Image (cartoon, rainbow, N blue to C red; front, side, top):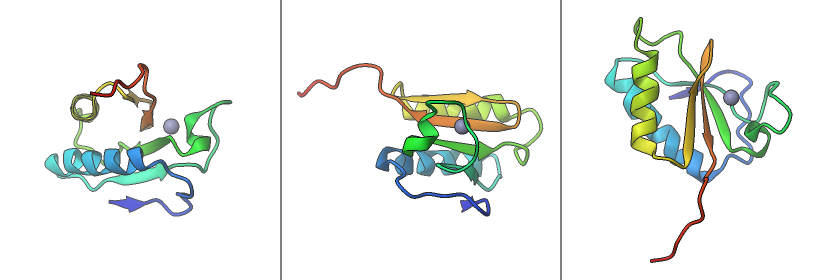
Length: 105
Ligand SMILES: [Zn+2]
């Protein structure tokens, strides 16, 4: 895994560190190095989870031709419903956004 030059990591949520480990596994399984292209840096929509360190963007142009959707699906499957994995035109956007309350067991 590597960070694109200029990527700022300050304040990244620990949940995303775990997610990046999973992403690296999935990328490596298709023979691609994982490159993080944005965390809290860059221009994102108003209210974006990037600004609170709860979202990351991943490079997709280095994935094997036609595999981006399968990689997205595999990451989403491994991480479960508390993460949103969105395939954008030129990157994979991953955010931590729990939708239901946690129950203690
Ligand atoms: Zn993003």
